[in-house]
Length: 281
Image 1 (cartoon, rainbow, N blue to C red):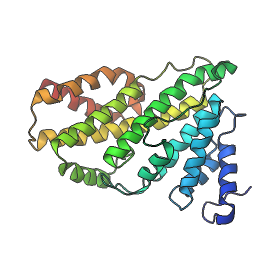
Image 2 (tube, rainbow, N blue to C red):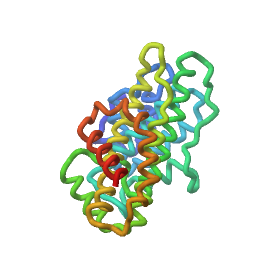
Image 3 (cartoon, rainbow, N blue to C red):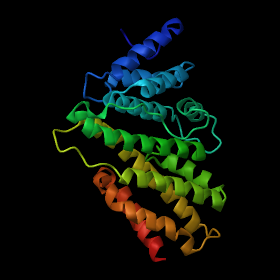
Image 4 (cartoon, rainbow, N blue to C red):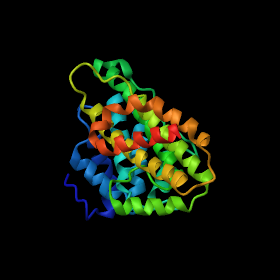
């Protein structure tokens, strides 16, 4: 099968998507989804048949009892929803994430559905299983944030994106900002509670999950920082003790996030310095 990311024949799109999805989530490989299939599936997300790709991935996730297949489906969902972040819109956005969320969850539910996974089929699946559950919880939190903020947490270190986000946040009520901070902190809490790294040979699927979630943690820190600064710098109707519960929660998850710190050292150091400054009043 030749995957064409530009000219997908509409009469064959179901079959082509299904084949690409099957190959990307094969149970016979202990590697993450192959790049060429991920790239293809990402390329269709913002097209008219994007919902078919999302729905097919969700269906495969719900039906499989294979831990490896479930892990790969989650990675695909994560990457496909991130790939739809063309630009940096925000609250009230009508872009794909709302449609995607409706496809991913059943009738307003808030948790990705996993089948009864065959956890004990091998040492590999036993090691991978807790990571699949952790990763699923992080994605659940991601999609709740997407609904509230209008974006998957994927803001990059680009000044224009930050400028747009700062302008957006300045228009929010204080109550809205606190609600958004709470959700972003909850994501960092989930991330910090990651399982122990497998002690056998490196698990490439776990590594892929951790790398994607590390990016989300940095984005969450950026988004929280912008909101802290809006509350602090612009003299919102807040008092130091209003932030105290959130700051305590952040400090409790700091150690659990430290594994990722070296990837974005300056951002992470600035974030924790701000948390300390706010904590000290």
